[in-house]
Length: 225
Image (cartoon, rainbow, N blue to C red; front, side, top):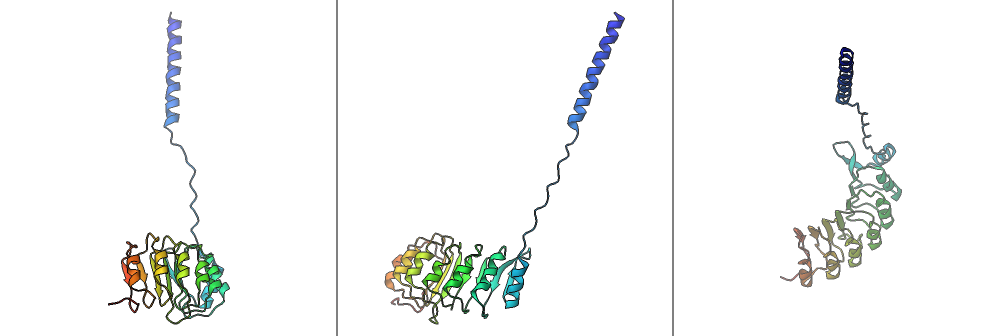
């Protein structure tokens, strides 16, 4: 009997110790592998150097990445614009009063992050605007006051595909009611500049179809008093 009791005590003690060990193992913290940090995005050094040597002025964000390239007052070949595709966060390009033409727009459009294009005073036609189709533009600035830019109503069919467009500058261009009608499908258009265009009284009901408009310039148009 004593032998049996002693054996029972040993068995129970062994079971108890086994449960304790198991619990201690479960309570032990698991060691997780450290997650490697993602490399920070950078702009291509060769592209930056080439544009800097050309005299392009940059605006950068808090991470030091270029978000705007200003070519105003510079003379350059179209291939220089190809460097923009190597800038990680480029959003805005100012080409006002430069010599860029339709083919240059195709090169520009390879930098697909660009959302703001300023080609006021540039010799660009409807074909050039069609070359910008790959971009998700939020602002497109044109001006035909000096006669260099020949964009007209026909190009508005392309412009109507820029569904993110907020601001559209058309001062001095051959834009009338036909072109404005094509813009009524733009869901976010809030600024429209039509000074010195062919806009007349017949255009007013069409403009009323764009409820998102907040700024509208109509100076020196064919509107009656």
